[in-house]
Length: 83
Image (cartoon, rainbow, N blue to C red; front, side, top):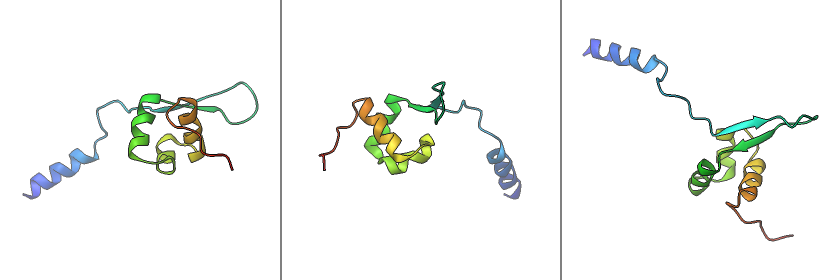
C-alpha cells in the first residue's frame, strides 16, 4: 500500500501532458497604456452562464469591468439601466 501511495505522489507531481488552454491574450495597441485583452467569445459565453465577472477576472487575468466590457462588445450581455 505504501508503494502505491508513493507512486501516486510521483504521478501527481508530474506536469500535465496536455496543452494549456489559452482563453485570453493581450494585444498591444502600439501606443502608451495597457494592451487590449482579447477574450475567446465561446469560452466567455459559457463562463458567464456559470459565474459572474468578478469570479472570472482571475481566469482571464483582468479586472471584472473588462470582462463586462468584452461581454457587451461581443453581444453576450445587455447594458444596464442608465442612472
